Image (cartoon, rainbow, N blue to C red):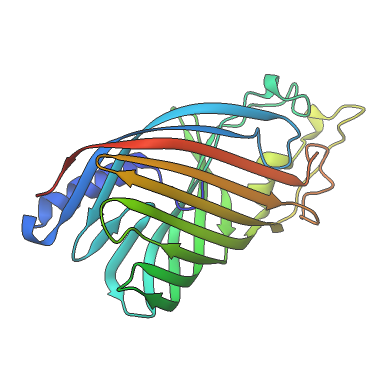
Length: 269
């Protein structure tokens, strides 16, 4: 998910930072959330799946660190440039649920994390509205929670326009458009077919690295008192991607739909 970082890492960073910061320098909110999502089993799959996912909600504003949809460092920041932490998520797939992957190994949960250089073109309304270029580089790891292994790197240059809530209540939204590139290891995790899993209709295949599609995201939220309602739509066009010859690649149109809410039960004074 674009700008959604692993929640356990968010929790750890928030606790560590809050412990080292004075109350005067830090504003925070904590809560829980629930989101329902519907998306393809993996990009390029013709089969869809739905998930209902609970998660912790954390928001932090401080002198050196901001945590919201992502993590922003204020250590190296100006009116035009800042560094942030970018993350993403790939859902696990049971190959028994996929016609294309039948008989192949399952896909584990994939976590993506890495730095992003953000170049700010325009900022208005005292920072509540912002137009910027983001240049994130992320390492992807696959895990079944008993073991973890690196599966390559991604680079996702993108333009983002964000409108934040000026007050506690009201609307906020973000629009993103970008392009993805990935290494052969990352493409291979999803689209390689090793010879032992080849069939008459599924020939062996090795994916190269390179172009991995274009995408656009729209995220909107509305807050009233301690509840935040949100919706997220992503469209990714996969025509012309480097792995389009893989027998596991079936659909060049990828849609992600998510809707949910956060309940804030504690906050700084």
